[in-house]
Amino acid sequence: MRSLEKIKNQSFPFMSKDEWKEKAEKSLKGRTVESLQTATYEGIILKPLYSQEDEQAVPDYPGGTDYRRGIHPLGYLTNEWRVAQRLTYQTLDELKEKLKQNFDKGQTAISFEVSKSLFEENETLETILGEYSHQHPFSINAKGLHPKLLASLETIGEKKGTSDTICGYIGSDPVALFAEEGSISEEFFNEWMATIVQSSVKLPNLRTILINTSPYHNGGANAVQELGIALAEGIYYLEKLQEAGMELEDIFSKMIFQFSIGGHFFMEMAKLRAARILWNRVAEVYGTKVNNQGMHISAETSRFTKTIQDPHVNLLRAGNEAFAAVIGGVQYLHVDPFNNLSGSTSASERMARNTQLLLKEEAQLKQVIDPAGGSWYVEHLTNELAEKSWEFFQQIEAHDGIIEGLKSNWLQKEIATVYDKRNKDCQTRKQSMIGTNVYANLDENVPNLKSQNKESYVLKKGNSLINITAIPQRRLSESFEELRNKARSYEETAGYKPSVGMICLGELKEHKARLDFMKGFLAAGGVKAVESDSIVSFENARSFVSTLPVTKCFCICGTNEQYERGGHEILTSLRTEFPDRVFYLAGLPEKDKQSKWTAEGIKQFIHMKSNCYETLDAIFNELEVSTVEETKA
Image 1 (cartoon, helix red, strand yellow):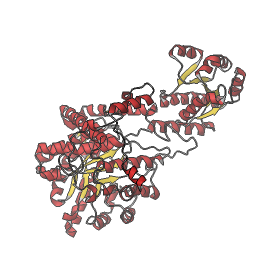
Image 2 (cartoon, helix red, strand yellow):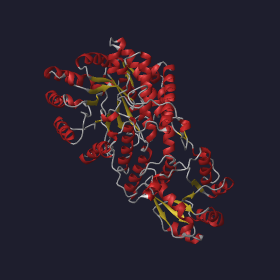
Image 3 (spheres, helix red, strand yellow):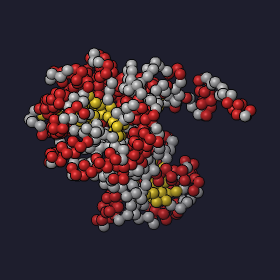
Image 4 (spheres, helix red, strand yellow):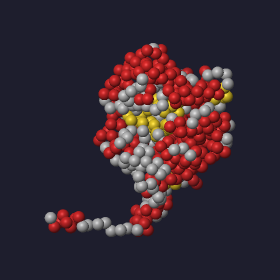
């Protein structure tokens, strides 16, 4: 007991920030703490330590002030987020069966992909909607089929007298569709507005105005751009629908925002919190009532971050993204199955749904009110995001609003600039994608992407079309998937895997570090590293090169000392003996020594800062030339 009391009375000594900094810089061996700062794609500098000095005024409770802490005072305790897994199906009977099964196993919102096949059997569709619409809220992006789906629901409501009980959201975002499809249609937009006005009367408790930032996210936009665009779209709809005769309060009550949640855990969490701050500011400026100032959010895990290679890693990515969404505060959430790119299965769909149930029941996130509230780091990041996003929104307005920004191609260029930076970081492996650009599995049977049968809605709506530059829907891993497809084609043509011979100088301990680096580097493109035995002379190297006819590409591996001691002689002799071979060097020699290696025949230095994609693509070009020559012979 005496020991227990002693333990209880122990406390950690107070350490000042300067003392922490001194200790930290000792461990950094000469580097400063400031060297640990990182810049995000949003232009925000992240510090290695946040303290009470970074604290700013935070609302005392959720559901109040600026709504950053959520729109409900007790958070998920009284208003759980809805498990809105978006169901796919081939027939209406399959959809009906899936809805039944999923509601029995944890789904809590009616959510499914909307396609034209839905309306081939109107009676069946009405049966499905009628069975569930009075029990569960909707969570549907109806895209261009918005009028048809709402008309079906209005009919059901009138027949069954359940119009007042139909809730959730069935929305559509025409501007996002314009951006994705590359055409603006005035006729399409006018039909959308007429549908909104009509349904506001017939379906009073259903939200129908969707602001969907996912197409911008999947084009490569950063969090600041997504939030600025969300504000610009929201205000554009407020103005247009008021012109169409809707009351301001009705418009606010019909709005819902959809965000894709990316891989930066804290940034995505802060993005949702900042979104509520910003929309509250807009609502206050418009003078709407307090009960309409809170932003309702539907979230989905990001397609942009997912990979076709090593797809089980997508489970971790989606889990991280779903976690961030829940902590950030959402009303609806969809988690993509890990193998959705190649075609989901009942098992992967179950895992996706259970990801949310684990967060609810086992992580018990539904029991905690705003767990991020008061965190110095999260609050600081939230404020920075809100400020920068408001500035970006003002830039959009300076370009005459969201539509004019798209017409002039200004917005597309802004997003493309961020995407190019992300893509370069992925190609140089500054940004790691496990199983794709690092730790790739050469023996993996990479599945094919499932075909995307995208239905066009805008292009078939009248003749009043204005063509704009579409925002491409992309994923970060696509360039490496392209390389793996090249590797597969090469193997099918040549009968063996594409490979590079590794000329390993000296003992294993001397060349192992760079050999391991090269194995990982080449594997990212599906290229096999064929290593030699320990090479100490030109004769050893000549024997290895001459007995490896499956490739014309070779890489010298060793330490810098070995390179200077015997590497030049070996390379020069090999170039003389095998003039048709291509030679690379692992590592980056000092600047004053690089020209000598190049003159002696080194094609390229491959090192940590190399652009992995471009280097591997160049190697494939060399290998393909070799294969063509062999075929001719």
